[in-house]
Length: 92
Image (tube, rainbow, N blue to C red; front, side, top):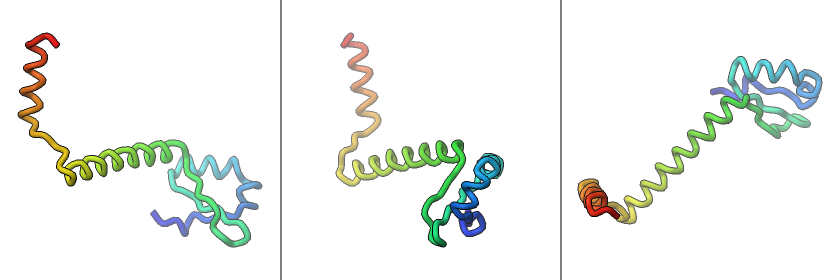
């Protein structure tokens, strides 16, 4: 994704908000909004935002898992399954 092709000024955003939102929704490409020639914000459509949030959540889970592996906080799956079966058969 190349942000440099989708750069608009805040003045453009104010004057063309409805058109820009429509374009965002159709193209699903983010836009950089500038103020006084400086990048100040990035806007995206809701679907892209939600997808990004889900991706970040999954990456956090993976990072946590990797941390737990590095810290030795793991157990063999066979041992866990054995314990679960034992707890279900004992009626806990």
